[in-house]
Image 1 (spheres, rainbow over the protein chains, first blue to last red):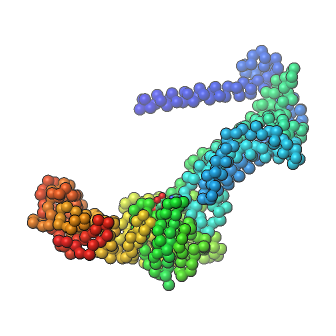
Image 2 (cartoon, rainbow over the protein chains, first blue to last red):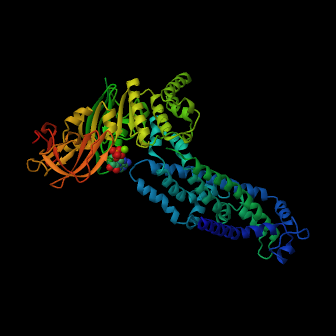
Length: 276
Length: 335
Ligand SMILES: Nc1ncnc2c1ncn2[C@@H]1O[C@H](COP(=O)(O)OP(=O)(O)O)[C@@H](O)[C@H]1O
Ligand SMILES: [Mg+2]
């Protein structure tokens, strides 16, 4: 009993320590975003006090006008990409897991290949294609690229989970006359919800934070993403630290909101179960 | 009208053939049990009958109609699965009604059939519950209810009792037998448990490695097994097979059921009791013969026999079977 408690304390200690380390940079960004420029440099680790408190960073960011647009663009790109990754990933995974057809194995391997090959290698070709199709400087360009980038891992993870969904359940649906689509959407998808949430969380952060593809495929003002938009505050000679820190603080919020949504799904999925 | 006809059904997964040329008939209202050890192809055969898997060769006729190319929902069958396979997102009523909704039955018909089935299976108090809120036995009854409401031409059961605990298994077995009587429906029931087969079946189909070994009523198979496999598979404790302890032609094996052996000094064989199972109503003796073969003797009632006792064993030669080295039954039993 005592040993168990000791272990519990040790485990919690380790977790707490890790949390503190992981959250420290975020914490520093947050407190400094509420300070005057001088205070940021004088005492970067001090909390804002009445003297050093300032909203100048946020004012700059919000005055920058297009910030909300960038915000919206990032949100659209991230949510749309996640939607397509989950939809097409799950469908491909279901086909691979459920149906026996010639080339099933090969197709699975081919789809998994993308996990090992970074999509950025193909940037030039992608840019050429986007130019040819007239998608440069549209959000679609980003959504398509991110969907392609996310699919391999999604198919890989989801097909593994779908193989574990009870055959009896799917067969019961077939005997009752459900179409394959209803079986997929109503019976299988809810049961692999935790896996879907995992895939979503894995994909969300890189998409939200990506600078590379927005810079190359969609640098125009009206389709800039938040990460790209925030770059205006980072100059070659002067950097508006108040604005950068404020923009970063604001950028955390939607990711956190999305994360909450997915993690709740994750937990609900784990606890609902009960096929048997 | 015949409920089910299988004509030369074979099935291969890639290069491995799991069903070999299976032909059989299930009459209207008949309860037929497919029995065989795990992995012999029972579920595969049932899935082919249901249309969930396609046969590599052969035809399936249900109610006189060739359904080889008909999807499961249009075959007039209903199936009960080993793992219950209830829809987790629907309550008990929804689980039972889904198949009928898919058939576009009217709400009145659905309500009538669901309440009839739920009354029959004592599920009235649980209609609004989700599967996760039910016990194993209740879930299995819902699964059976889901089959009943379809009013199918043919019921298919795939080891429906194997996830239940022993007491519940006996109860549910009786319920299924009752159900068969009250619905007078045709049923195909798959199990690896010979007791279920013997107690439920009008006729038993014994399968081994994808081959039909023998078809017949439980007593036909018990009294007249066609080979050593069937003889050993049906009956519990299972038949004793002796090569050296009794007088048999070389290469042949004598089979004698535990209940046909009796304690008898100067009988056909003798041995030492190595273990005694006292069941109250029965006593099972495990005996090792002088030739080193082990056999089981089933005695009715209670007997004060201790481990280590030397016993003589006798039997009526008419109760014994003789099998060749390949397992096939030989015409006459030796004494
Ligand atoms: N989808 C499948 N692919 C390959 N082999 C299979 C498949 N389904 C079943 N089998 C094989 O077919 C044989 C019979 O399986 P099954 O019908 O489930 O046996 P049972 O129900 O009698 O235990 C087994 O050897 C099993 O490995
Ligand atoms: Mg089986």
